[in-house]
Image (cartoon, rainbow, N blue to C red; front, side, top):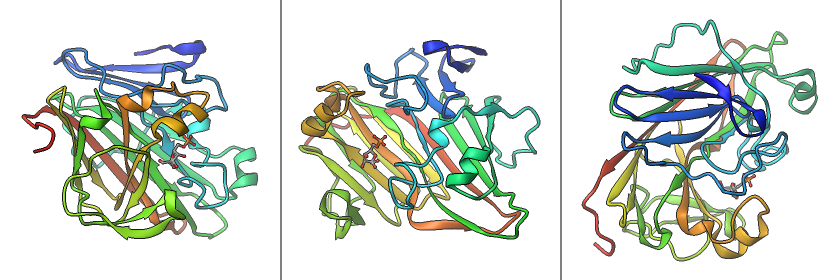
Length: 296
Ligand code: TA6
């Protein structure tokens, strides 16, 4: 249902019959909560997050569009996460065969102001859905609605903040041996080592040409997040660690221990749309019990 969230910002609460739930703020079209059927919060939102435009909400699933980071001259991560989205009352039929009955459709179109900084007209339709087992599904459909015949290019990410019990006991599987651009080393290209990724310091890597499925194993919670993506060839892994955490006003000094960003993205190769063309990017998250023990 539509209700008032923090600072009176509008948010939609989705409840699934099995007990799982999700919350989406119209501000940023941003998911800020995803709970399993035991009411456990699966996403991280900083206790110091600022729910006040134009500051992006620190946590949940920020939508990075029309650019990821500063790959295109706009403000970091574009402006979609800094805008108030609308509820899309008459979405064109959603071809995805998601069996979910519980969803909300949001839409974002550029304002005059936006057209000054990014002179392209688009319609960005976002569907946030809860599946029968509590899976969270996000589908973005971005259409070039320019009348001037001009194509446009963009980069994109679902900047997902996962809640983890202890970052030093988390492993990520599915990215080993892949190439990545290291944001901490001038975006230089490297190849990842041969086994699961573990964390003992700041990481900011854009893995390119990644598989559709990535697993994030939380030892203490005996829980695995499974991230499935479609139309999003890259995956960004980020943890600010202690120094960077302290430097962020909207992030608690110790909170880096309890979060990890694994972001389904299209960064290395921008997406180009001719007028009338539509791009679709899907993210499906599930949280399953896992018998993983660290050091395995
Ligand atoms: O996703 C990684 C990243 O690009 C990092 O470089 C860091 O800047 C992070 O995003 C957070 O960006 P933000 O603009 O939300 O503070």
